[in-house]
Length: 91
Image 1 (tube, rainbow, N blue to C red):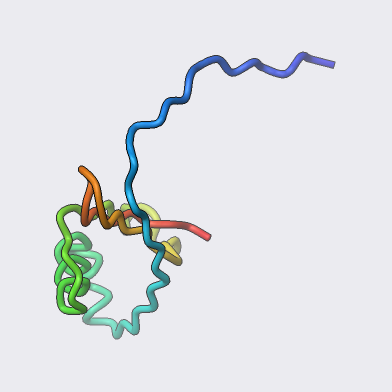
Image 2: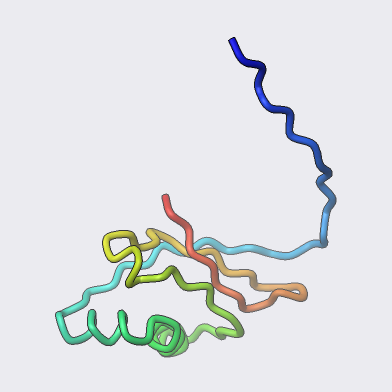
């Protein structure tokens, strides 16, 4: 039986930030789905801002490469140097 690979490295705390987790449900018709595919960053940024959130950065999945995969949630960093950055969660 082959030996398991050993992972070497270090882990260090980069800082303290508050993280919030959101579940998002979008009701998309064909036209809004096409807009989302054409400009996912812009559409999601405008949507979140219309809901009252600040968006300094948004990490979006490649919707064209993964058309059937959409994040089921998002985490939002609400404090610290990465404040108001949004990242997808695939649950």
